[in-house]
Image 1 (tube, helix red, strand yellow):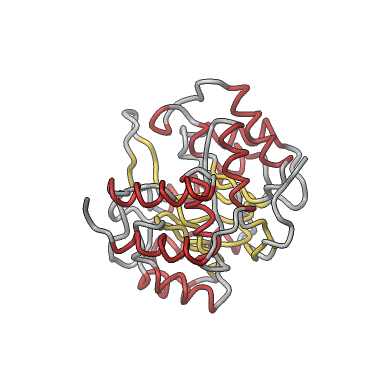
Image 2 (image 1 turned 90 degrees about the vertical axis):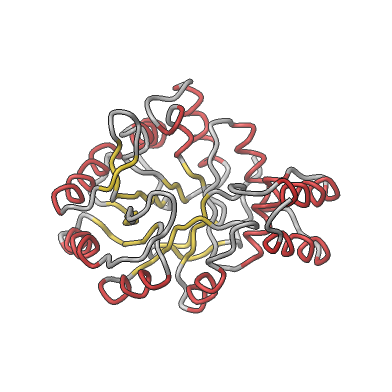
Length: 292
């Protein structure tokens, strides 16, 4: 069975992982709320990902809530020694499916214990603190209080490594003064390039950057440009967007999500897609296109 290029790895939490991983968010129900439409299909996607060489899975106990972690445990436990599971805390779901901040010491501590229980682990590999000052994107403000709580849980031996999500460059700098930060997870793709400088700075310090929404927020003209390149290369737009991210910087780790084994295989094939220089030039221009 073909897998991901073994040479394409980067350090995450003290271990080298394949740069193309898997995000479990889409395994939950509509709106990342409730159970999956097809329980067995969700298990099959997780098992297929690991069988094809994925050793970095991104999840959170507020996906569902509790749904994706329990699926991961059912599908994959006992876990292989090289599998790195990254989870997030800092939010909770309302009964209406809303996303709400959960920054109190009690909420953060409970979140870590919920993740441990539902994943069936004694210690979490990497925990990202998801900053919720604005649910739609990063917003400035001190992260010292919640990060100090998470660092305390790390000192207790419940968490091996700490990351940050939905943060500004200033918050990353603040966070690094409080604890060792092994990864940053923000929205970034061909069309949303506001983290360009942050990615390069993190690369210099060998810190992983994990973008989400690889096709999120494109204008029609931007999507058209991406589709044109994909058609020329005989690939899907998603494959090209992922391949561009892999080439963009060596510290970028990808976590595309899907609830379909077929789409999973398509996404993983992006690791083998080689973008010629003229395609890279055309794709780089997408970020400067602001409107149709």
